[in-house]
Length: 190
Image (cartoon, one colour):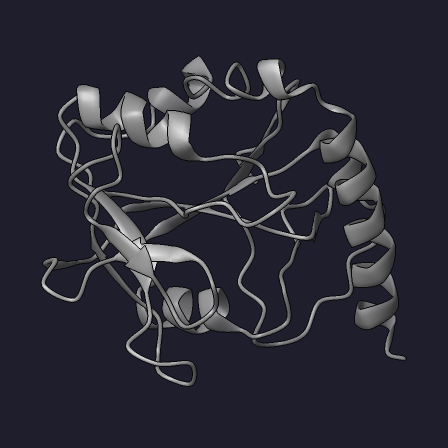
């Protein structure tokens, strides 16, 4: 097993244990709005990229609602098929999610007719993050490839506090985060 794979397994287990310990009635209170230092960095006309959280990931739905209410366009990842490139498409119903369908990875995504958008600020899920903005993702490279192709987009990680690791292995293709938000801290900008 590679160093990254070993770290992923350890951090996935910690993330799962942490998420399962949060009472259901408390989950809706997590990350209701971004911290002030981050909000101040986001222009009023910025397109905000988010994600539809998979099991045990930090929920991003409150941010979708917050930014939508503030007048921002919201974009979520969309895949035409399992091996296709990730793109972002408009999420027009963050309160009801009627505009979403099941995607090829079992994650809800904007339906095929939704407009393609390029986020200015991109909130990304992760398995782990380092003290300098290093990100350990799922291992598919979708976000790293998208961010490499869109260098002006500002990536911000959303994580549980338990996902901080002292040493995240970094490879040449890994794109660092600009900041990380957890339920208790704001890390960055890096």
